[in-house]
Length: 385
Image (tube, rainbow, N blue to C red; front, side, top):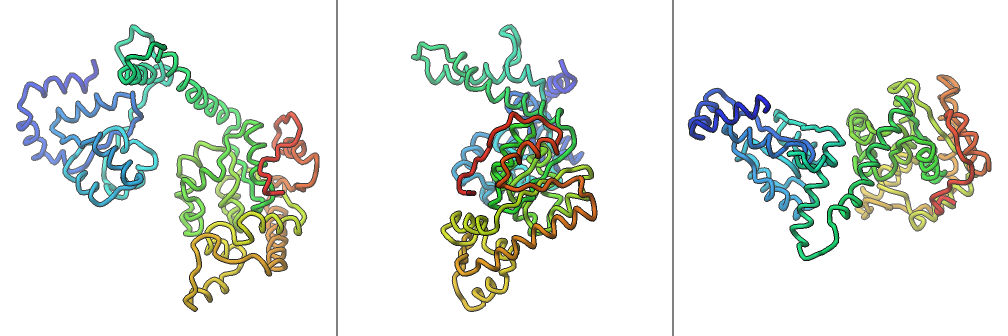
């Protein structure tokens, strides 16, 4: 029995209001406490102990339903409800997307990340007194489907075990690649998705558009909040990065010095084909967020002129690409030239430059990274053609 549980049992001998009155005088409840551990890691036990100490427990089930109904955002009405309690557990408080909102609302809150041995967390022997994730999910499934004759335990194991093996595989890849990070700084529409797929094939945990969009790396980059990017979970658990914001001008200069020893990949292609690929992506309109695109390709004057004239400019795909061919090709060539000049002066051994049309590009890239590649084409995004 842990010391916390022993103290909890002693406190249960005292009336709850006496415990709370004593702790209030001592200032115990001035800070909120959140148990941010994953499910089946002792969060309920931890919350019970805090309740025995007099903390008012937040309505976890009600909070989970509220967050789901309000598109997973911390609404004002929900914040007001949370102010009346001091301790909280499980979802949504333990979800990674919720933690930044939690920190902004309660900067002085204490968080308890309960952890557990991965093997025990996923599935313990049947004679164990501690319930694992598999056994918990099986119990819930059997309760809902008591009339079903198939073995729900085997069904749940089949559903959950692939995710568990994905976690183990990811950790193994992190250990094999070490601390070296690889950044794909090729400008958009030059095979960035295919390069990311290649990096995953050769064992690099890779973050792409999904991770960038989830963490708003593009917005943080344009706002100058670089440390928020580097401290995000998806950045810390991956070793290779493709798509935005890594193809934005000058960001490679920042990460070059921020992460010594990192590698960079720059693919080039025929400028005419590149512009045709830009046209085919968003129906001949600017790609992504309009004001960010205009800043990257130096169309800010046109963008602000439209705003000053009262013209409606959509948040995404707001301007036409037609008629701007020469300007975009000039920006494309200038971006590649500046990137290569920077590495030639500061560390050309850290940059790989390849041609997208080269049939042996993946073998050359594998040699640059010091990894083995089975060969063959790994082209993924047909719209990049």
